[in-house]
Image 1: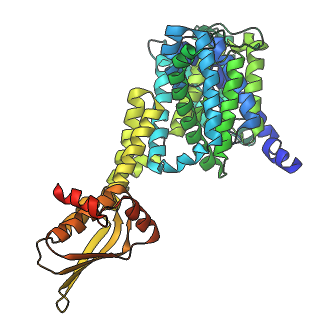
Image 2: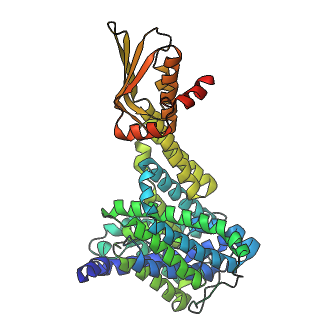
Image 3: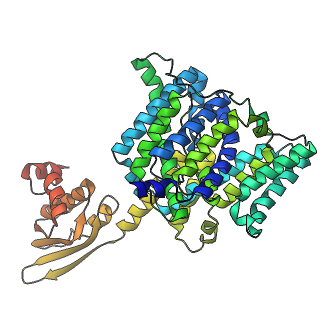
Length: 495
């Protein structure tokens, strides 16, 4: 127990504390921006980010991963806030948490195994593009000072780690933020700062039960939004967990993460915050800045509150150009440049899945739509590919006037037509044997194809024997097949 606590919390104290501070600084403008997207007061996003980060540090299934208010979730809240107001959003946030806890107990985290590597790559690339696009408003119609500060910020981020000793101790994004803030204050530059994003809260969050009527009408209003938020939240969290697993060469407990996200969202809703989920960009900042354990996530949430309530006069001075530089670094680091280099080497189907995922996510700004499109395409390509791995050969025994067909491979909806076309129904033979000992029947489409083959041969006057079915195939054929049921066969032959 003590060993587990030490490993999960105190095995990397200095790295986690510094990384948590960097993440907290980057969380502030994002939380405010996401609140503005959702159409709520900035403190709703800030309280949510504080609460979710702190709670998930204790109950999440992936140490070192950052969860807070996110843009993907904010986009789904716009209509609800516009039509019904903040209180209904808080109620929807609570219901979102309930759904996510349920998903954890139903072990839906295991569904991530159906998401192929090409979908994850497309998702990551799309997110990198969206992160970069989100910075463009800060870089358009501005003075040259902003471009100079952003360029200086990127130079610090990429060159500071090369400085002997100190470069390895301090995270370069933190050095970038502190340095550019000092320069802006000393030179008195008139550029956009965090303070221009919106008014910061000046009190601790308080316990709030949503002021909505507890009836079926309220449930019908918030249910579709809560379902959407729960699905997008879990998808983004599972994807982020996969990426952090790869970056740190460790594993995470996905079902615990589902429950943890649910508990964190319920906490956020009760403290006047909006629903959130894991953040790929912030998680990558955390890992790249040296964060590894739960302490880094806790520090990010706790320091965010300290920043907002205690250091607000310094916080509002941070130039947006410094944070834009950090987020550009995140988008460059998030994008899988190997996926561009591998376009020539990888199969066309893999490339199509990756590109379609990117296009759908960027076009809709909805991660769930992109992942769904990618998963469906990957499934179709897989079904088509497996459908080709089926072969029917035959030999004729003149003495007994028997044609024996040997079926090898997978018979299912994709290969059932090919299966039927492999038999010669016009050949005049007395006996037909269909040997299925090296085949597997997967669905009722395959069973229907077998019925059709047997009935067609019988219609031509041949005796048909089906042999060699394995146990699983025999079960589905016995249950749904009709070629050995006289009444059903009569109906089938009448068509």
